[in-house]
Image 1 (cartoon, one colour):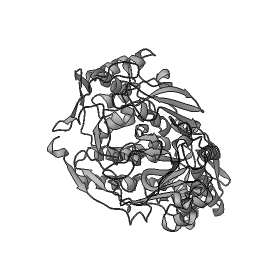
Image 2 (image 1 turned 90 degrees about the vertical axis):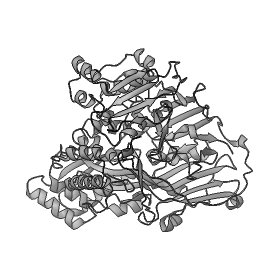
Image 3 (image 1 turned 30 degrees about the horizontal axis):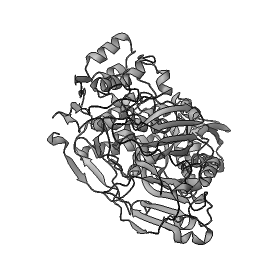
Length: 638
């Protein structure tokens, strides 16, 4: 690695600033009878501090956990024979994927499958969101002094699930295919630094355009087990692109046997099927019902401990809870609004301590649950406002909505305290975060002032309705939408927020088609660099959410690109503060909160513990904010 890419560390401990919500609590409870509940409880409490690591040129910034655990231990007398389906992990999850193809899948449910079936050249090192290690590559890449060339040597002897050999040709095929498919609502735009990619992405994708892209030699096969990437420009987050889900290497044989690559088009078979090199292989997907994976016995490392995985699609929380209590489900997604179904309210609200409820009835008898809570995440929750739809095209009207939202009530009540105030597109803990940038607070008087100013300018007339969509399966966002509705109603300014629940796949499709005036949603950064969110929220038309809101600030996209190519940390900080200020001043996002974690599982489910940080490897903030798991690190038993 060239001298310019050596690590420089800037430690920044946020324990006090996060107002105690960085406390990470893992509580285990085994229940045999009401009398024995207390004596059969395990409690592990780790205090989490966030460290920001700055790579001076590669610009890798990340959370690192530094726990100081305390514990009391007892002996489990429960027999493993009580565990239902001991060779199968059942996760009741609320969301159905849109696509299972690395070239088109760009939402959490699909990425859950991608990270377990496909593999990337490099991958995250346990719970770190930025420490990387080789995976399909046999070592970290050699990077040229000008940071324009990345050369990987690959592991030998690896095969895809269909028996196709893994080699440099498969790697080039996968990356070229990602770029050539160029799904406008997908992840390809993240890779536009590769030679020829940006020009192709803005072309008509004709045969000539394809030829020009390939002739640019952005991805080269050096030999059977060496591949080289040539960039058109220095790109600070590039290492993280190689670890991102969409960099998963696909079997060329599988693709070619099922339609091949058509520039600008989805491969329908690949959208519904998967052939990778990962620890799990795809079995079936029944949309809106379940996804099934099985351990790949020919996996190049030791085969996964859990032989079968069933991701059951269960949008209704009460159904998930019932399945969890009876032992049918091993892990469930629990919205923050329902945290007190499992933990006691007062200890959490008053001092952020996780104490399990003493009236829980887990089946089979003698078994219990584990709760992880309060780990800081990089999930930002927001309400997007599209200027395509009047009166949202009026800035004063958007200011009225931004001042009308009751942020603290949302955190305390709708989120049950599992959140922090949101200041902008960058979550607290990221390099580039600045809590001094312009932001909104709850101020009904100002909200009314801006609404009436917009009405006086002819932006709207009385009785106007503005539609706000939210995921029907997420109670937290339902409450956020209703909170805004009620706040605006109280102002009596002739505006009604029409709250519309919608199932998740339909909501995503509507957002991608730019047909949502307002939408309550979440975003978990694709990688631990500020560019991950600046590109998405501020770069129009390339940014996914900027395109959905039509946020188009003169020159802002140039600033986003400049920040991604800047080496000096102080200058990058200045640029990201500028991006945050200019974006917030447009008021096309209501930054409702930054989430903290809540994971609930049965006590027979175990996660690999990172030996250095003494926290589960699943505590990577890029994953658990969406309650998705790298299944290879999970086992079952006592």
